[in-house]
Length: 105
Image (tube, rainbow, N blue to C red):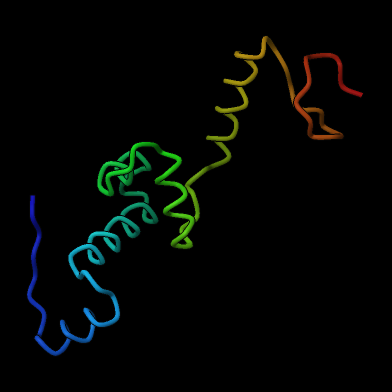
């Protein structure tokens, strides 16, 4: 799908001089706003910008001063996944280090 809109020629020249490829600049602005607003996630960012991995997309967002959408719920889900994969571990409340259950200092 292609999206287009008209710009006055003087505005187009001014923006092109500062931003280069206006189509790419508009696409990137769209991606940034969509991700910041939560309208779409990192996999859409990756696909729209043609990155192979989510890590490339996250690095690109970081380079554009866009914080990664990672909630406390995401952290808890990741913690539970680690617990499952590591055979039952937990985060020590004092040191904040992941340790096997019942081995906290």
